[in-house]
Image (cartoon, rainbow, N blue to C red; front, top):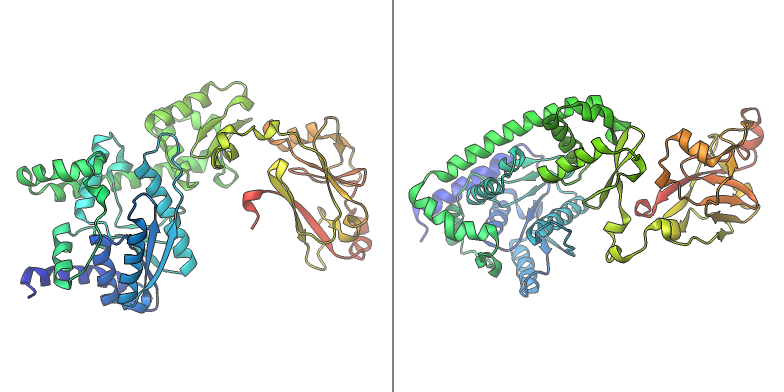
Length: 483
């Protein structure tokens, strides 16, 4: 028999979901992050009842951390199918980075996988089953870790940014776990119990089992109080984000891809750190601890030999060239077992030859990049292009720099050394280890500099050049950018 309290819990949940659906298109699909536990089981069941099964898809992440992970996967798929909802699952490979707990690694991998699946299925929003007890635990954890206002803001009811392209919504965040339990009992739901939830070696579990029960007795309203703390912190963080945006409008360059070191360091310490945090969040880079961020600013302030500044963080490197501070990917950190590999610049690079016959990509793994031959639409005559007939006339050869090579930046311009041209173009010294592409015995193309002006068609010869047939633009790209 369903009690009045069970019915009340059901109505509260339905009201929360109904409010969200009322501002969405009637045919919008909703993804539910579905672990198979109590919370997500309640959310999936309620979503199907309120929105309709045809609009719901359950997304399950297989972490592989538990010996029961395969059984959980089977349970989740069976539950979703029984409700008539869609289902998808993805396995994630957890590579633990230095300084990150296994919980943090699993969380990052889980959200990356969920975002990818949401994009694949074209959903309008991702619903997460966090509730008020989860929020209270998160605020307490952040307090105990000495977190700033971003950490104390805990979990937002609704989030969308450049990291999470699909809105992440927590419709149950104002509800207690006890209310979800009543709903599950009234609906006769079956869910799985993660055995790791009982392991008090994990900080969150220690709070849940040892601290929360005591707080419930002595401070029965602590959940509401902590929720207010999170709301106040979220407001403060929003103001800090606005301040960071104002500062970045002054110190950022190249559409936000780099910062002026002089302008950054002219800010006082706290404001410079806030600007750095805003810059990193906008780039999708995890924000480091206060101590780590303080050390980054110290190294930027003390750097004299700019090429020597290399601060590794989250698979990226913070670099400095002239007055520009920017992030570049660190291939040594992003590949498995990479710590034992030789740095790219120490790899012996042998000349490689290609007989071009219409290929669109020429992979050059020794330089960890590829040369892309981009077709130019008929009738267009960009200066930095080469006729296909010319590419076919002689073999192409990729050679390492030996020193002293020269090229022209434009037709009729004097030939100058690549070193001078790299400096003039602002290419940092550590990025100049690139393949030089020759057509026969003549230098044709240099990454970051473009096509040798000796091959480019002068403006007066546009009609003759256009008559020579299709043309290609040459582009140098990192392998990760090639589909």
